[in-house]
Length: 137
Image (tube, rainbow, N blue to C red):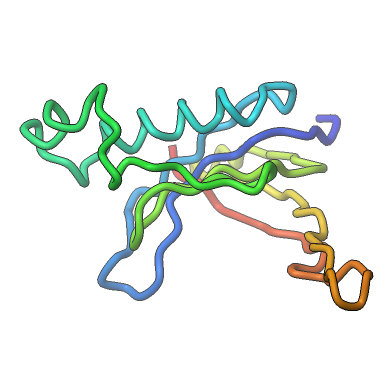
């Protein structure tokens, strides 16, 4: 399989108390804009196990502050702990292991920088990194 650029969506958490099992792993076309990805992320979160049906009905179609998706153009997030996160990744590859039933996924996150107004230079926020994930399906 040829490595691809894509949006991936999965749960992120801090601490075992917030761990999500099984973690979802959605893949979207990299050509989709951030506006679409944010909308998709919001409705995945709205229909997740975190909200009961009353909360879903109460927040659907409103501007409820708990349903705000934040983004920087390459990463979008909704929720606290756990949060649902969409990331634009590069060199995405996957290989299914029929003996275990697991999928081994690898991708790269681009370096993130921001402009420092005082020094007038770019500052690194996150270095370029490679990630390996095992996904159940």
